[in-house]
Image 1: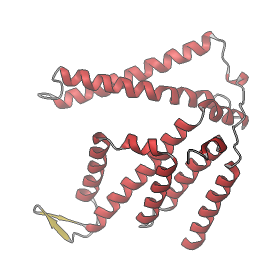
Image 2: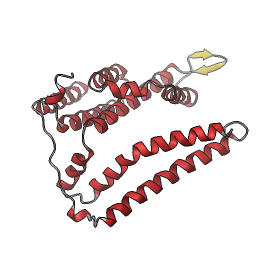
Image 3: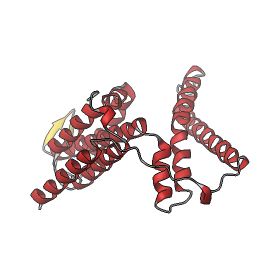
Image 4: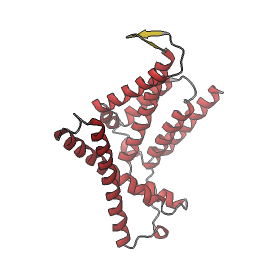
Amino acid sequence: MNALRPNVGSLAHIAIFLWALLMVTLTAAAPLGWLLGACLLLLAAIYPFALRRLARPRWFYLFALLVSVNLLFGKGEPDIALWGLQLSTADLVAGLQMVLRALVILVAADGLATSIDISEVAGLFERFGLSGLGFSLGVAINLLPNIREGALNAWRALGMRGGLRSQWWRGLQLFALTVLTNALRRSEEIVLAAEARAFSPEKARSYALRVGRLDWVVVALGATSLALFMLLRG
């Protein structure tokens, strides 16, 4: 994959992201966990760094919570007993498929954000006449590292001060408020900096996408796989 990377441009990464979203959408109404698993394996081969970022305890707890909620409050017919609770195998399978869909979207999104220059995506919106949307997208992407770092610092400070011990619910409220306030303050700084430089959406430049030698091959393979899936599904 490293040998192919110089021959793959931004168009291929955008196509992979859209392909992943469409596969998740098309399999939403059918129990096709094996297909979602295959999509995840393919994305993991293309973006191994994105999957490694998800191999952390906090993501495991989040996915376990997602499965547990679906298992406890699902509408399936109970057919198994666990610790005195009547649970449904169908709800368990549905919860695991929800986790697979979330993993596919997260890996695809992280791979897209890391592999291409955001100015290319912003310029693509400007090229289609969506003035200002490219700038808004750039601000949103620019905020992600800041929000992640601010949230981590706020969580550590809250834990050091014992905010999650006696009044944990109040601590979580303060944590959410701190993260939101930092994000709004950072976005305001970006907007003010743009205004100071006389930025105007009407004057935004439309950057050309970087196209590699294998990009159209990736686009053709993605379109073919989607067409075959829809044909076999129908």
